[in-house]
Image (cartoon, rainbow, N blue to C red; front, side, top):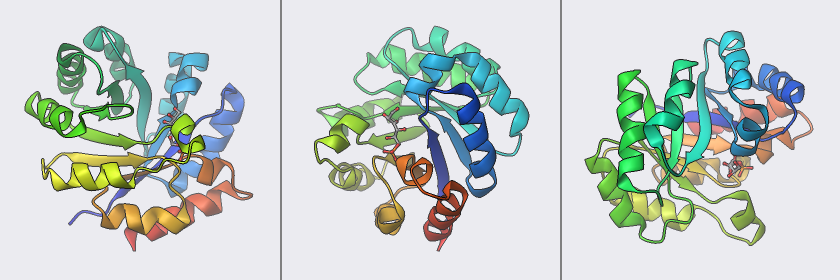
Length: 212
Ligand SMILES: O=C([C@H](O)CO)[C@H](O)[C@H](O)COP(=O)(O)O
C-alpha cells in the first residue's frame, strides 16, 4: 500500500510569515495547505508565490467552496493549485463543478465533511460524481469544543469507496499512527507544526511517524 502523504496547514493571516513558515517546513512534508483564513486574507497572490517557490510540493487551497464551484475553483487550478476543497454540505452541482474543473486541469477536488450531518450519504453521492478526496475534518472551533476526527474517520473508511481520505483536526505526533492505521491516506497537521518550538523538527517527526 502507498505511504500516506503529510500535509501542513498554513493558518496564519500574515503573508510573509506564511512564506517563511512554508520555507522551513516544505522539505519535510508532501503538501502545503493554504488554510481558509489565510487564502481569504491574502488571496491568489499567495498561491502564486508559494507555487513559484515550492515546485516539489503539492499545494492545497482550502477554499471550502459553498457555491459556484467551477467558477470559484478554476482560477486557483490555473494558478497552480493541486487540490481545492469544496464543502460537503453544498449542493451536489457545486461539488460536481469543482470535480469537473479539477479534471480539466488534471488536478483533484477534495470534499470537506465538516458539519455534514449525513456523512455516509454524502460520501457515496460525491464518489458517484467523481470526487477525488474525502476530507474528514474536525474544525478549529469543533476542536475547541473537545471534538476529534476519529469516529468520522472510522465511518468513512468503513464505506470502502476507494477514494483518498484526508484527515484533519488536531493531529499531532501522539495521534498520527492512530490516524494512518484507521485508513487516512493524507494526514494533515497545522497547530502541531506551527505551534511547535521547532516547526521543521515537528514536521519531520510527523512525516516519519506517518511513514513508519
Ligand atoms: O482547515 C483547518 C481549519 O478549518 C481552518 O481553516 C485547519 O487548517 C485544519 O484543522 C488543520 O489544522 P489543525 O487542526 O491545527 O491541525
